[in-house]
Amino acid sequence: MTIPNPTLERRGLARGLKVWIDVLLFLSLGAGVVFTVGWPIAAVAGHGRFDLSIPVSIGGTSFRPTHPLALAETASADILPGRLPLSQSPSLVETRGELRLLTSSFEPALVFWIISLVFFLALVLGLLLLRGILRTTADGHPFHPSNPGRLNRLGWIILVASLVIPVIQYLFGVWVLPEPPATEFPISPSLEFQEEWAFCGLLVLLLAAVWKEAVRMAEEQSLTV
Image (cartoon, rainbow, N blue to C red; front, side, top):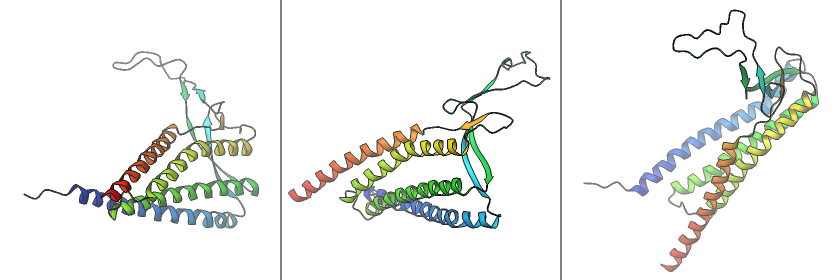
């Protein structure tokens, strides 16, 4: 009976994940090139009108948007079998989306282009760091001295991006939309922090510290042997 080697299995898993990261990296680079080059060209071809996307909240406030809904005239408050009674004052809470608009103003378009470029660069850098970790692991060197540093930089990218990007998007929305547009329902610039990504960044930083200690212990063990 042949007993599978867990080390070989882990290396095979690392190779498979590296292929997946390579595909994501290729797609991200392609999307970044298409956007950074194709978006200005499309704007010029469209008679100088730039297509902007702005995160917005449906409601009068950016932090916890709430928008009351008006009931239709045919709505009834009767209790239907197996259903809850219809509330007389329903509201949309924490509803967010993206406002797409065309503008001929160059300054907002330039700022939007720079923000998007920084986002793509952070994404590509994170994928490159993760790819380096998987490459050394697939080669049989999971405790390579460079891996803790890569993981530490990846953690900071995730943490900073989860905190800074929402603020930048909010400030951009405040700048572009100084007054609420006259729409069917009120909208305002959105400010929504990604707590799960911030928590993920902290976990990656913790893992990097643990990995650094593991690398140190592996080096000491190899010197002792």
